[in-house]
Amino acid sequence: MAINDGDVQRRTDNPGSQSALRQDNQQRVLAALVSAGPSSQAELSRHTGLSTATISNIVRELAERGLVSTSPSTSSGRRALSVRLSSNGAIAVGVSFSRSHLRLVVTSPDYSVLAEECVDFAPQTPVTEAVDVAAALLPDLCRRHGLADAALLGVGVAVPAPVDRNAGAVLEGSAVPDWAGVRATDLEDRFRSAVYIDNDADLGALAEITWGTHGGAKHLVFVTVSGGIGAGLILGGAPYRGNIGITGEIGHLPVGDPELLCRCGRAGCLETVASTRSMIDLLRPVTGAATSTDDIIGAAQRGEAATLGVVERAGRAIGHALAIVTILVNPGVLVIGGPLVPLGEILLAPIRQSLAAHSIERVTRSTELVFSELGDRGHALGAASLVLQQPGIPLLRW
Ligand SMILES: [Zn+2]
Image (cartoon, rainbow, N blue to C red; front, side, top):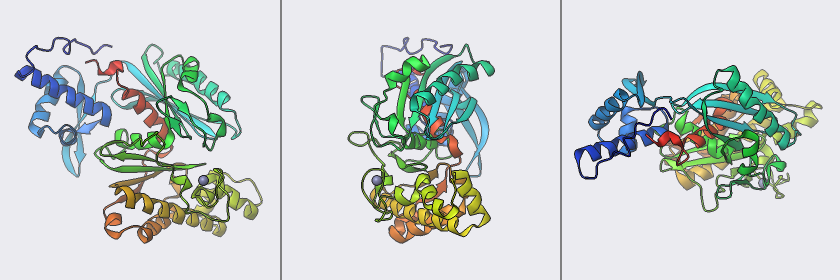
């Protein structure tokens, strides 16, 4: 790493000294910038518990050493200073896979995107083939953007499936069944790099607090509505992993159509009416033709009645599921992501109404409900964050 001046090794033997305290505080600020991405000085104060005056001094010292850079910004309408880690020539890669496309982002430790590409493929494409496409795309994309000589810290992979994080393996229960059994180590040969793998909704949540506009959010739930539906939870400022790592499987809450069978084998799950796959199935008898997610968006925006009916029903079911989530965890922010975001109020209004109807008023009133501003990029960006936040990544050896 270019940025490794050995300060940590030179730490004083006297842990109570002013110098040791200053170095501890500097490490806290650097760690906060790794975990939360670019932040204002006020946000750094909240993240670290240090006073704004102390943060201001530390940021100036770190900037003089070239470890962080600052730029003017605004926070809550007031002038503020945005602080970000300096790029140190290293790159972290995020790849997200869905049923029909993959997205690959090449990022730097200062949380900026250096290169990005999305590739569509047929929905039945085997996972091994999709991985081959991504593995071939990475060196090609780096070469085209002059990044071929950069140090690759690792590849984060977002999959539409539950993941056993201890084993680094994909579990059964995916909307794309042949992901089951795939291990991070299987992918390391293909990418010639360390690979970290996680559930796409969990990484979408991580992206919201690192890349998105919710950097200060302590309690945030991110819901991805796609071929499957899942939620990622940020509780107390950190991803919530649960007991065995499977959390937020709200696609299987029983708020759908009790007459319809879900892919999990039970009837009535949320996904029976609100996954994009179910919406396409429900519209096929009406349209008489194969429909895509883009077709749903186009028809709804044109005011086509049957499509509006299916979207509204999906929105009401999603709102019902979110009401259960809000009653359980009282999040400050609910973020909806996935390919249906362009529907805007057509989808958001029934979600909002149903959430209000099924939750507790004081909870609903204090919960912000928004679409993700990261669009379809959240899963891949979160996968890159996963790499940047790995303990022991050279990035942290300042
Ligand atoms: Zn189900």
